[in-house]
Image (cartoon, rainbow, N blue to C red; front, side, top):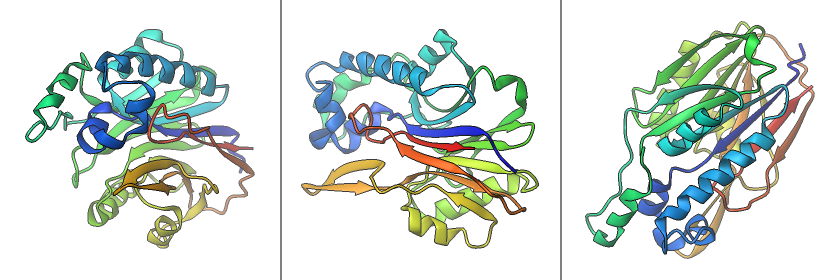
Length: 265
């Protein structure tokens, strides 16, 4: 059963998380000089929108995580595709307990909410049969957007990093979506490829994207760590012969994650 669709996933980075957790060692803050001028985040949002316009070719679905409210509103305003979204219950904030100097970063966004978003190219939108959202009971800052097409389902998701919460959240997705037709789960799994595949031995996993480059980069204790935690997975009760091509967008520091693309023939 050919899918004939390109699925992409990208964590676009809500900047509050970068300021809270990696302020002193952020490639993104450095690239855009945001420490000097927090309003440079507007330029990064413009860059993200332009990248998405180029990436959203025909027959394409893009799943986005950590979409700031301002970015979401700009995507909606530009109206270049069909948009399905989940507004997360947990609203990010700047942690200022020990960093009062970071209060200025609270002004970065007019809308500081966080969204998960699925973009659907205009040529595919008439094939959408329904959509719904999932809020993970294990972590209300994470969830999924489910978009059902005529012959497949796409689930855009952001999975918690905690082991127990990750297992519970994946179980919640599997309980929501039928295995009758192929469903593609794309997103930030916060889990390395090989470990994730081992986690899923009890479900009919038919494909898991894998590349030889990192999709996420962070500096911990002065050491640069490269991780492969953004994935596109395909599940189905029937065997599938999936011809595919997997690629990762260049690491240009627009986000701390790189866009992953899988073209299914």
